[in-house]
Amino acid sequence: MIDGMGNQSGKFSATILACLIGLGVSARGQQAAQPAAKPSTATPAFREMQAVEDRWSDAVTRRDQYGMELVLAPQFIGISASGDVTTRNQQIAALFVKGSGPDSLEQKVISVRFVGEIAIVNGTYVVSWKTEKGPFQEKGIFSHVFEHVHNNWLCLNSQRTVVAENLKGAVQEKPKSAKRSDAALPMHIPLVYKGPESTQPPSGSGTPPP
Image (cartoon, one colour):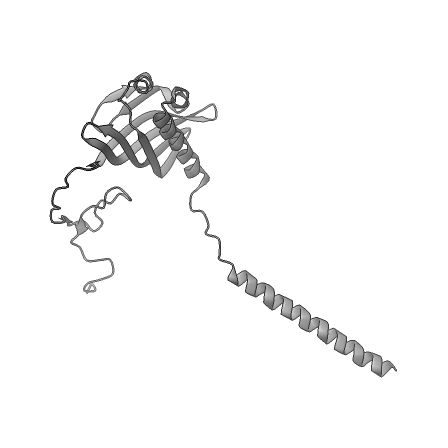
C-alpha cells in the first residue's frame, strides 16, 4: 500500500515539474518576442532646456507677449543673423508690427552646459516667413545664455548665425561641384549643413604606420 502511494506521489510530482518547466519556457519566449524599449538618450537637463526653447518658439509664432516675458530676461540682448541688436522690449514690440515677425520658428537643442545658475545652450533653428517673392526659409545655428531666476530660465543673450537660406518656388541655380576640405572632420551641422567632403582617408584605413 505504501509502495503504491509512493509511485503515485512520484508521478504527480513529475507532472507538476513538467508543467512548471513548460510555463518557464513559454514566459521566456514571450519576453524574447517583445521588442526591447529604446532607452532615452536625452538627459533631464537637456529636455528641460528644450522645453524652454519650445516655449520661446511658440511665443514668437503666436505673437504671445506674456510668453516672451517668461523667456526673455529684462536685460536681454539679441544679435540676429544679420547683425541687428535688439532688447527685450524691442523683441516684444516687434510681435505687434504687421509683417515684421516670422510665420514659424523651430529651435532644436544640440548641447547644454551649466556654470552655476547659468546655462549655455547651443542648437539649430529654422525660421520661415512670407515675402513678396514667396515663402522664405532661413536655417542656422544659435547660442543662448540663460540664467535661473525664481525656478525659471530667462535668456540673457542670444546670437544667431545663418547657414542656409531658401526661397521656395525660386529657380534653383545649377549645383556647383562639391567642395572638399583637407580637414579630417569638416564642419557638419545635423539637418542644416552637410559641409564639404574630406580629402583625408577614413580613420583606420590606408598604409599602417612603420
